[in-house]
Length: 79
Image 1 (tube, one colour):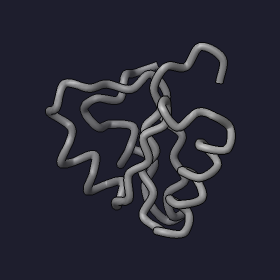
Image 2 (cartoon, rainbow, N blue to C red; image 1 turned 30 degrees about the horizontal axis):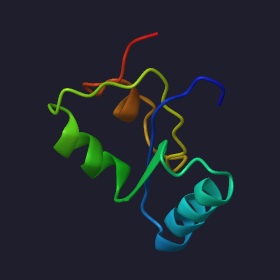
Image 3 (tube, helix red, strand yellow; image 1 turned 180 degrees about the vertical axis):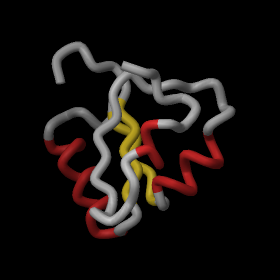
């Protein structure tokens, strides 16, 4: 949104990742949005010590997963 300089989108589904990328391009945001095709939990585990942190995380995990699987990861700033 306004003032956002960097968005990392992690999407496992190839069709959905393609849609995110093409929509970003259509809206002229492709330089701000980095779309990665991966399982978000695997990606978080692999990248938790890479020095990047996130101010805001929107997550849509399967409904039967405990909430703290994402919230308590390194790199996600506490509120």
